Image (cartoon, rainbow over all chains, first blue to last red; front, top):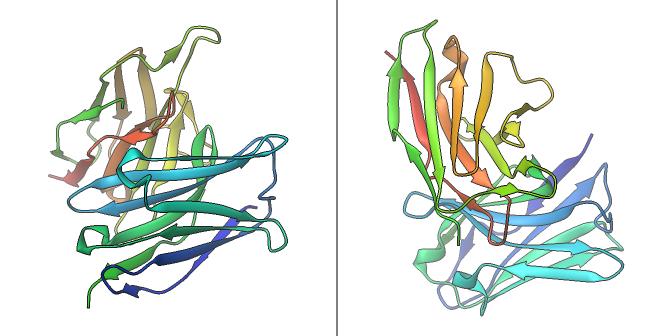
Length: 119
Length: 113
């Protein structure tokens, strides 16, 4: 049974960096048949795919154009987890952030983290 | 980007009655080489992440009741709940995984009439 456990702060100041981690159990971040995803959800933007990292003999990542200049998704093989960093945040980045596994569909999700950008 | 548009935005259905949700993609999500539609349906209840109901447009996920069914191909898809139960009150989303970026519909809220 795959489980994803999110961690990270729920409050970030404007212009600072949002950092979240997703710990994986029951699967490997280095699996060559899945991708590891970050998604956010807000009333104004709905469900928004932010990006992914995946391993196919080497590591790849893809990002949404809307955040491409500010986002990094990194795997951590030593801890079997992956992370999200979103730089220069503004109140528009306030949302519930989810990590998920993509195997076709997004079949396993983290519990969600409400991140509020406010001073 | 592929734009996913759902209709209606909300609907109220009596217990035991049929609920139908439509999803239209701005371009085809049918991959000709394997004849599969790269379309998923999710159910989301308050305070929870979305849960997969249907993938490949019409394949029910494990443990999903058979009152949920998906149909359609190309650009037009439908999620049907054949006999609405109280526990089906939720928001339903379609999502394409044909290309990057993955995109979702805006959601359809299902309530009891």
